[in-house]
Amino acid sequence: MAMVKDPASGKAVGIVSKPNKAEVAQILPGLTKWLSAHGYSFVFDPETAAHQSGVDTISREEMAARKLSFVIVLGGDGTLLSAARAVAKAGIPVVGVNLGALGFLTEVPLEDLYPTLDSIDKGSCGYDIRSMVHCEVERKGSIIATYDAVNDVVVGKGTIARLNHCDVYIDGVFVSRYQADSLIVSTPTGSTAYSLAAGGPILMPKVESFVVTPVSAHSLTHRPLVVQDTSQIEIVVMTGDEEAYLSIDGQAGMPMLDGDRLHCRKSEYQVKLLHIGGTFFDVLRTKLKWGQR
Image (cartoon, rainbow, N blue to C red; front, side, top):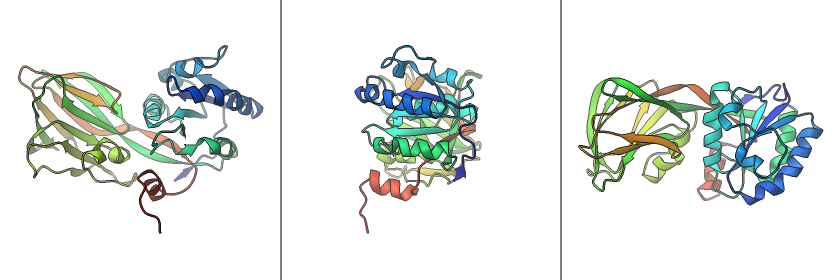
């Protein structure tokens, strides 16, 4: 775990929140008061600005161009994933404040918000580095779209009811033809998300790997496959006249056509998650309700 030696350098903070979350309006007055008292300027995303007028408002993507000390996320993991993708290229740390969801990534309870901010302000808060997966969509020999995901990229059924057919290659070597509802390429961070629900393994965040997990595979012998994150993963989509759909962290994406190729590899960007203490296994026991000693 790296340490934030001078997180308040520049003294500016971005605030991102889940849309239509009533608690945000109650949190903001105290939060902005604390930030102002400690010398921080702040910017809101539009979802946060809906709860307080007269503030500097920019999109999440524009926050990457600001010299922000860190970004505060008020909401759940979905909101944090969106914010993390937006600011990862700028290396801006993110701290997630859980407002009632399961929250593997938004680990700060609301009651610990101000002690956490004090720790960050004093430079005694560390951060975890989380890898991302980069994917490119190739259609008829040309790259038509690129994405970076924190959790996973998923090739799933569009409007069709039948199974998807996908050929999978690892470093140019044919692995198998999968017949499944969906095919997931997950990072270690995403191993506790959709991949876990589909029967995939839990990976510690520092494990340098990806998981390829079929969802409801036609063959019972098709099991989740763990590969090194130096691998080049290629998925060839075969849908005939129908469409499949590419999903990025369950939030963005595009239709995929027959013959499209999805190229996945480790992203050049990383996510910095401010960390308040405890271990990955503490999180698992808490979130998954594992038994205590």
